Amino acid sequence: MFLAGAHDSLTRHTGTNAGPEGTILANGGRVLDVSAMASTVKEPRARAYRAIDPIVWPEGSMSLKS
Image 1: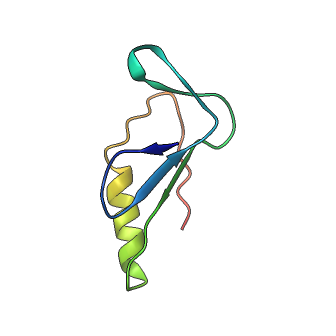
Image 2: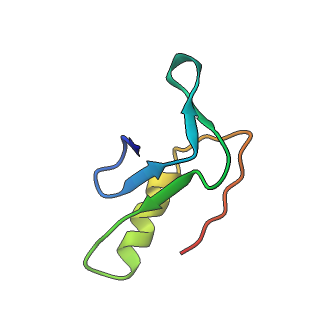
């Protein structure tokens, strides 16, 4: 499933279930994948990090890998 967001990146989620009021709940395993493409090496990383900034996940943990 894809999440709406920035037009210059792609955020996918897996291992999730629909929660109350349209929330997305983790159902185990790796949950988010944020990726981007650009014509330089540095720009995709910047785009992906911009896409990560608005994600609020109080009970989760993030492992940022590039």
